[in-house]
Length: 251
Ligand code: XBP
Ligand code: MG
Image (cartoon, rainbow, N blue to C red):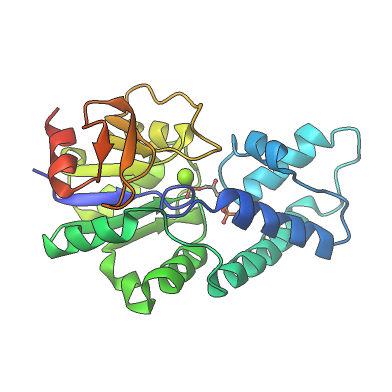
């Protein structure tokens, strides 16, 4: 019996990596006088590492290995990430980052049916609440029983920890939940916690390996803009309703 939906954020609630997070990292690098510039394909490679602070560290150690490690590196990463979050939340507040098709519709249906809603993400809680407030209004933060975000678990996706944290806080078993994700790292994390997972792809993730996902689709779909099925046992086109979510759990 389906009692909760657990949503990833970046790439799933919003298609925000390329023109949201990436641009914000670049603005932070510029502010700090660094000549680092993450272009669109490079950022796709860097998305292999989840978490903004972890991603900066990976870039410096893997892509700038010919240069000495910056002084006070941990502190620099923390300050860069704070600046990046400031730029990113400003983009959100300016209304520049919309929700993906079907998100608002499915959240409404789930709330009407009394389901629990939760978030499981590697991004900061500040980014999550600002995204929700800027797209669905400030009250929408309370629609979610649990917001599991950022550094509350040390091991980020693909580790299952953030999903396990969310399940624990919700007080439900994995069999009662459906996870909605957009990436291979997200799928691995959700699967590792024993969750059935629905994947909505985006340009950065559509060629990733989604073996074991309950279904892979273009997006959740709207009546005027149906989803397209990529893989799995759902109708070839349509909108994701709670009935379809329930059918994924019982497969
Ligand atoms: C996606 C991520 C995040 C964002 C940046 O997380 O890997 O790191 O790219 O966010 P998810 P921060 O899809 O699990 O939401 O810079 O705030 O870490
Ligand atoms: Mg994601």
